[in-house]
Image (cartoon, rainbow, N blue to C red; front, side):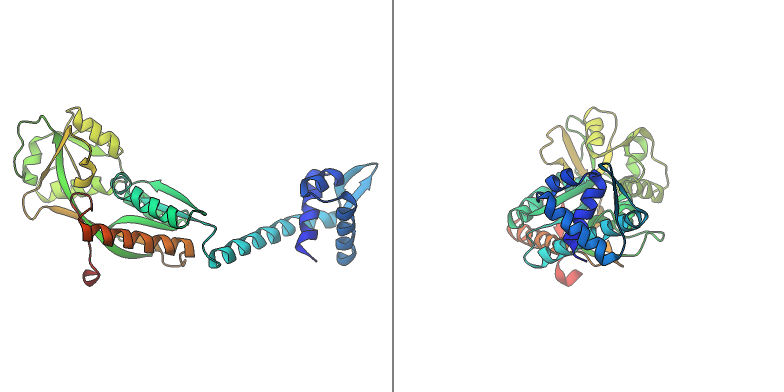
Length: 312
């Protein structure tokens, strides 16, 4: 039994017509019919009923069709995997990242990877860290840039801490109450713009306020990163955000929290029970090299620090 014979069989089964199947496979119709007959002879049963030009599957053909499709799909997967090993000419990387990283350094890292491996498709999912952890666990991502630490109910992941970013209180640039820094307790009197559920920034804000002994007052809640920043710019309230998202937004000002401030740790993660594909491993290496070089020449976004090898 040959893969080509199975491919011809599936083509006829789907077209219900030998000539149309041959045209679709770009082969002469007599050659296709010959291969189908050879397959029937090997299996010891007819696969098609050919009555008055009407082609239908026999019971043997019905049984073979899902198996043939699966075998052809497995063969294609094998070709793809071997193609990766032969030089990363083909493949796909499915990456999850938080909005602050997507809006900041990630575009340059993706551009570098695409230049090095133009044949590898890139798929990026933007979302809150908790959402990304769940998507990664379902096998819908290869890698994700998430916020540490993981929660007790999170699935088993392999994580590598790579960055720390400062969180600041963002307000409109024309806010005349600006100071060198602000204490978390002072947010009690300020209306806040709050992220939707699933964003780690929402949990970080609520946790910091509750540790200071108060519940924050929401002016509006439920936004994504860009919406939250626009709401703050419009004067609806303040928000707690990574400082690097303020680059290129002259209408907003970030004020550090009182020492020691508030920081969060970014890690690159993958499932513990699944080894990343070679393409995903190549992206991880590209990203880490990009971050190392950016830290060395001082081009990391504002408020972002690389976790050195000795810290890991």
